[in-house]
Length: 115
Image (cartoon, rainbow, N blue to C red; front, side, top):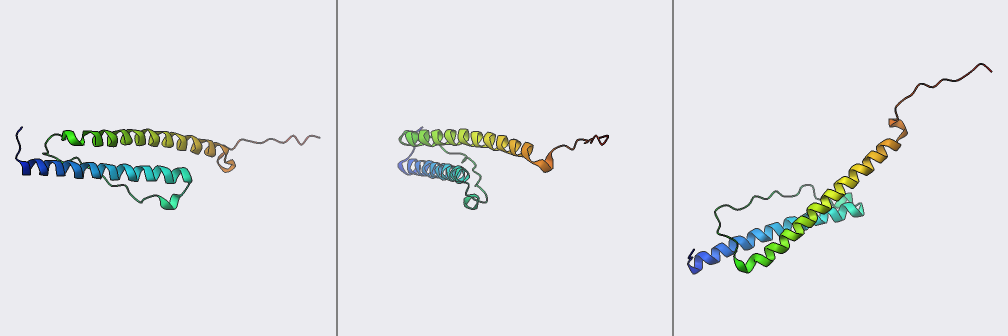
């Protein structure tokens, strides 16, 4: 693939912007996890952005491969952390549900009054 200098610069600029968007999304996800761990519900963002991959761009430039690898590693780490946090949250919720007296199943109670 032979590109003119201008086309190559445009192609690189699209990839730089794309990686920047991905990094910002990972930053936001890491901030959510940190806020959850601290118990700072007020610091949770109301909504994380949605990302759609750009279409019709050339392959990732070699000069950006290391940056892309780092972004991918961060994404995978956040995915694992989110999965662990979700599992822990479900477990805590279940324990809490089981310990609540108002949610305990009612059982018949018989009192022997023959004394």
